[in-house]
Length: 577
Ligand SMILES: Nc1ncnc2c1ncn2[C@@H]1O[C@H](COP(=O)(O)OP(=O)(O)OP(=O)(O)O)[C@@H](O)[C@H]1O
Image (cartoon, rainbow, N blue to C red; front, side, top):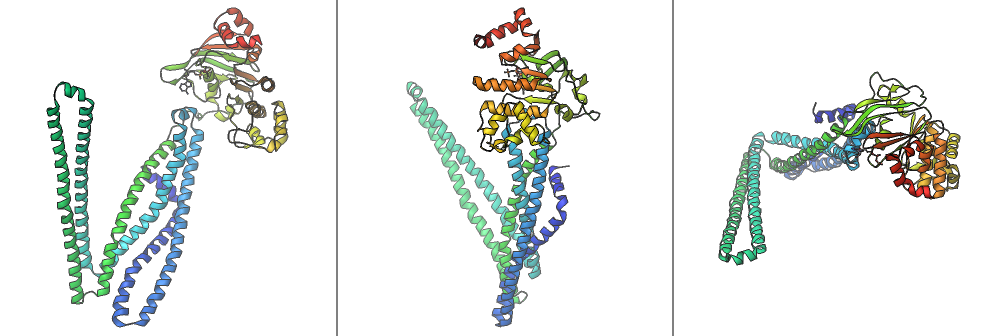
């Protein structure tokens, strides 16, 4: 099915309203056709017969028709807008739903601006095309059909004559236009040639002089200059021939129509008023034709937007539930990686054969140089991406066999960069569990060492957070994020420790909150802090997508391998404190 038809399908639910709208548009357009008719009546009846009664009827007629036109205009504008806006919010909502379902990989491929532009610009282009084009198409279409029909009614032979001659003139003008355009292009090219020649010879002036080639260059320039003259003259010639030709043709056509019309008036086949009305209709035909071709342009543009919108709607969701996916039962929190290979881009694996096991409640620190794959491991557990080979299991169930929601509901993530939404502090904590009561929110905030500072905010828990949480410090925002995770109460926790330095006081509070959060949960910590590493029951040392060492802090230091190297480089300063 093409996109045009798909777009029309969105209008389907509003067909009755569309029917009413079309009726309004047609009636409103019909009022426009009334004006030349008034001229006819005034000339033929009022002026010719000095008919006062007719004049009164016409006067009342004008008032009534324009009053009704106003009503229909209101109807058309309201109804068409209603339909278009509804269609647009339907499409926008569908797009938004789609964006919520698409995987992270999609977001990485597209720039944020592009995605926003789908929902704002493309949808807006569709909106204006729908509203303006729909009204204009029906209005101008009705005026066009109405004018031609009235002209036929007034004098069919004269109408035929007009309909044959006018398009001929239009065609001649079109040919004329395109010829002028192409000769204009030639002129531009000749001027460009002269410029580049100039540039070349001026910048190479030393070479010209050293080879004594001044005369040669003058000759070259002369040729180009002459070519330019020829192009200019050709254009002038075209203008000089084409303008009078078209004007002459037009004059012949108009004379033909006027002569034949006048002849019919003299013959008494048509009245003088009718002829004037006829000519008015004929002249006015130009407007609807022009506007309809403009509508065509708008629709073409809107279709480009529609193509993009439908392309998004048709994007395959690469990570989705299997038909047979089960709801993950409440887990103990054992997490296993079995020979996991993963690549973001084909043939460049970010993880190569990772096997590990975290026992329920265990704390696993992941360390390694930048780009080693630490965040990648963290991203695979909630199934933000699917592994290329191997498997990730939670409580021995492959995470691809369970419903994504039931998996992610049992995993908590505290990222490095805390993202708070606009809204109150309470709402931000509640994001962890939407149905939580205020008491539960406060409990979570207390556990997250956030309660105290929240109470000191201007409106306590009801304080609105600035767009990017700007009115809170980094540490405070982290503690809100921790409270949010505590409220969610997940069995598995993924913690990306912030690398940015907090002051000692703030770090202590954040660390305290994290310690409480980790109690009794399986935690994966991308570790940047010494305290985390010392506490960890298992440290995984990654390098270029592979596990190099596994053990506790003491064991690994003893091995004097990569870990002890990293440890010495990264944490030296802290050990000295
Ligand atoms: N979205 C992505 N698309 C393509 N490649 C990616 C993507 N994210 C990470 N990579 C690549 O995968 C590899 C592992 O990256 P990852 O972010 O897991 O490393 P990291 O150990 O967390 O590093 P850092 O400590 O710097 O955050 C890197 O080579 C990185 O360039």
